[in-house]
Length: 489
Image 1 (tube, rainbow, N blue to C red):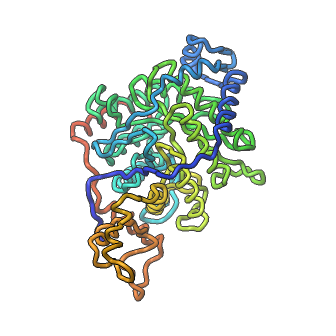
Image 2 (image 1 turned 90 degrees about the vertical axis):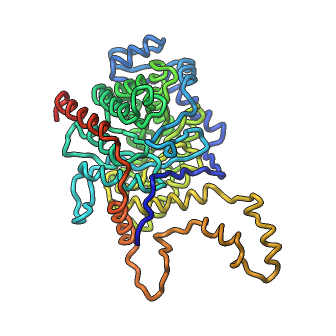
Image 3 (image 1 turned 45 degrees about the vertical axis):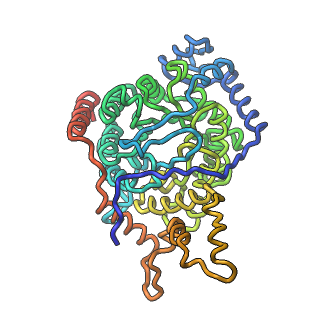
């Protein structure tokens, strides 16, 4: 079977159906508790640069303990300058992400550390070649609108994020989002790489091919290098988001609403800093909760409370007037094609677009987003398309109501010969993994995981992503040489 290899495309979900897990009074209660937390309890910012920005704008700064107390009016005023909508660019116009609340774009998962080897099937530490191969697969799959480096290029040590970024830009034309380039100097190199790909500083500001995600530190803290990198991105025009990951019972209260307050406070404090430093800088909000298993202290993500928190976080982001990045897939199971994984992927991947999230991660990883099993991205691609169809609902336009066709066929006829049938039956998407075609009863099909792996292998064999210009590739390589010389390895 030969794949139809075309230029990369994306198919965002445009949901007709909408879900709100919080009522307006509940949203207000969480926001009020968040503002009280920011003012009364405060957030740890271990960065002199950040503390000085807050102090200059009237926040109360405990310099000794590096705690910032934010008055509610300062937070509200600062966040009022953030844009509600903006676009993220790929290398082609048809790969642009329009973050206006009308579409949901899915991306890959990121920063796994282990890979089930493509050739041997044995478990090993991840490497740069894994980043490359998964970028090529993501470039082909239209369910993937933006690419996170899915695993770490561990052979490059502390410089791994920059090598991963260069590999991303060279192996997919889609938008790239990084979550591991931290520290001022690495961030400055990342910005320069984005400018090269975009064609210049102003072009990058207008159509950024790169956005960055910064994780907060639960509970109620920030990381120095991450925050200072975020300031570099914001000043350069690179959209930057903040993700809180409260763990119920460990780094957050053992309740969903308590975890939302803690995570929301972390994210809001970081976005407030960015707006005070660079008013109008594009930012986005992300909050992914989890649970500490009270019997084993294990990290659990496949639980109903997490799914509810994911959807609720989207409402909080939109209440602040921010685009949202939600979470899906990435459950803790270690094997593809299991009923547990299928069950929980349904909830995560469907609730996110129904709640109106602009961006969603993360397809392709297992074991709580730490293990790359390459064929899993094929399973997640199929789940995505099922949920795209569900979220977009039923078309009741005259063409789809088909009254003229119904009248022509009449009672006890059939629709096989109708042009309307020939046209529209081809538009109905049928899951290929679960309904392989042609279906021949006398032919014993391979196991579904083998079929997923075969499709992944064909993508790598037949799909060659659009290359960067030779001059841009050379400039990126020169930057990596300079970074290695300056920052060491």
